[in-house]
Image (tube, rainbow, N blue to C red; front, side, top):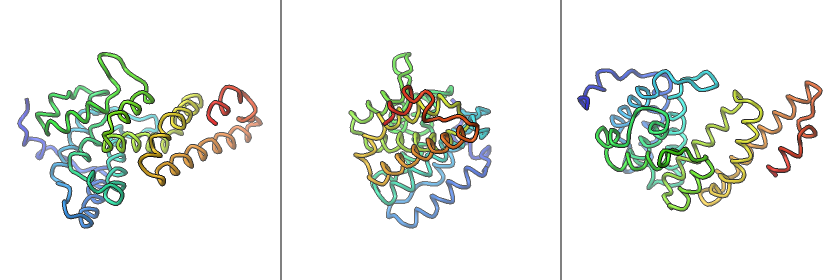
Amino acid sequence: MEDLSSWKERFEECIYAKKLLDKLHYLNTKVVNPINLEEIKKGIYYARKYHGLQMRKSGDPYYSHPIEVAIMVAEFTVFKETKFFTTDNIITSLLHDTIEDTQLTQEMIAYIFNENIAVNVEALTRIKIDTKISAADAINILYRSAKMELIIIKLFDRLHNLQTIGAKPLEKQINTIRETLISFLPVAVTVSYQLENKIVQLCLNILNELDNKYEENNYSFRSNNSSQHLPLIF
């Protein structure tokens, strides 16, 4: 294993890291138990290191996604669920895709950070006994586990994926919206009315944008293949 202090010499602040660190610096003024920003920097470093050159379909570096999720989780928990506004939960947000998509393992996370973060990141991964489960199954497993802090991370993971869905193919967008409304929305209802409403509104906005896009090209999104798409969504 590497020297655990070496990351400090290699840490480079980027626009995404600065956005999160500035946000947490501000939110720390609102709470009695502030986030450990030095540990957050370490989380950012390892998220960037292991996601490496992975890119999102939008063209953004992949590590920008977990950083955005961490920002959302921080903003939500500090005002709505303060007990979950913790250093461990923000780092878990930063690393939530690493076991699934990189070479970082649960054992390595436990060594670099702590056992709690390692267990929580593993719980968020969709790789279960060498099989990749669906996102719908993943959120249902978390819901049954009643680990609210992980449910919150998973919901904001989906919310950010919806916000950046435009770069994906049409069929993928429709399937994601359907899955969101059927599997994620009922869970969001148990967490926050505002979050539920935000997810619904975002899904409707995406559908309206798709409808307008295809109407401009003399193609009606709602009439063509409607039996395959919208009735299954609504």
